[in-house]
Image (tube, rainbow, N blue to C red):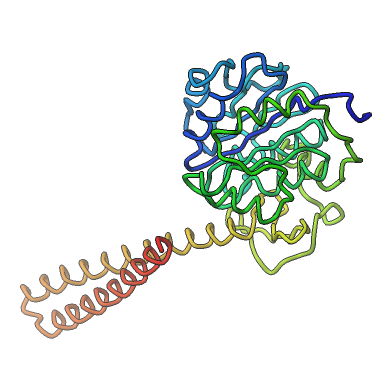
Length: 334
């Protein structure tokens, strides 16, 4: 592809918590007839989304949910759907039930990587408000393929974690409040794109995983080195992925995590285990008390006393677990 043969006609946007408001503001500032197609992923999981209708009303560009196999057009906004990754391949949209990335499907990184693989320097990547750091690895991929990286000013974001992570790990071209993004994107969309370098093989490989074009990650195809950690979702071994100075992990099935997402997943698993243990101790305490009452009514006083003692021990253990849970909740909120 020669320099200047295309404009920046592919715009990919990722958002999470606080992202709906940011997206409304952004699309409101886009001009009618924008000479670029816009693709949006918001973390919605398995829940049905009304995002397309919200964005259709928010600005002059028509917005619809993406459909697999659909040919896309400039001047249109396409939104991701529940439980499917939104991907681009040549001039078509793909929706695939690939492995979760950063605990999400749809996730932002797969969209960004697929756009970078197919369109290189024509791509503009935008990271908006959100928790953790989905979008950072994908934005790095866009930059490595010659594209443009834009990040919402963290001070302007309802949840600054995603923009802050992108600024930390990516050589961002523009960091602006979301109210200025529409005009900025309109300006960049009519500017000639830069040169597209040879697309790195690791980016295409990870894009193929999301598209379910690989059955598994064989040892010969691994992206990094074996790690001592196991996948929070499937329990499989994790490889540590080399991605600049950012720690990332993938398992043999393809589940992908940043280090922050791994910590979050492990913390949730611990909380679930503690909650189950708390319920178990309280159930055992209540059962022991009922047994004690039954033995007392049968005039088996010694056995009743033993059961009451066991019930108190179970309650003491439950209180310890409850305290651990309260301390963990307080630590997360600080």
